[in-house]
Image 1 (cartoon, rainbow, N blue to C red):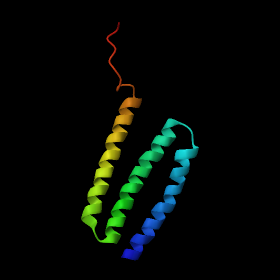
Image 2: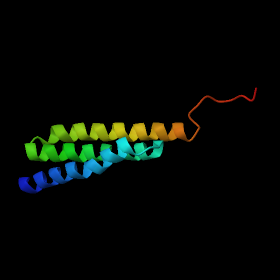
Image 3: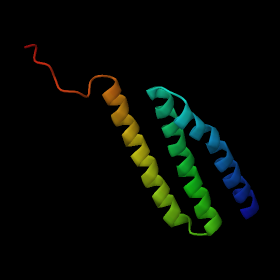
Image 4: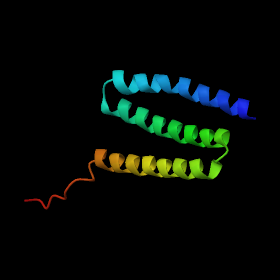
Length: 93
């Protein structure tokens, strides 16, 4: 079972390289934002797999859930900001 998880860890790391390329080489806010969200999901899965390989599932799952919640909240904040509704209200003057 641990061999399968180690293979999944290596595959996850290898699949993260195109995302890093997209993050640093592509221009535009939306490309970088999509890469950051995908990397957040990859790090969450990576932490959970490390917990299963290490044998301390409870600790790593808690850390991974905290990281996932942080990624979700930050994506909601950025989406609210980009929609134009996050700024100050204009009273018409």
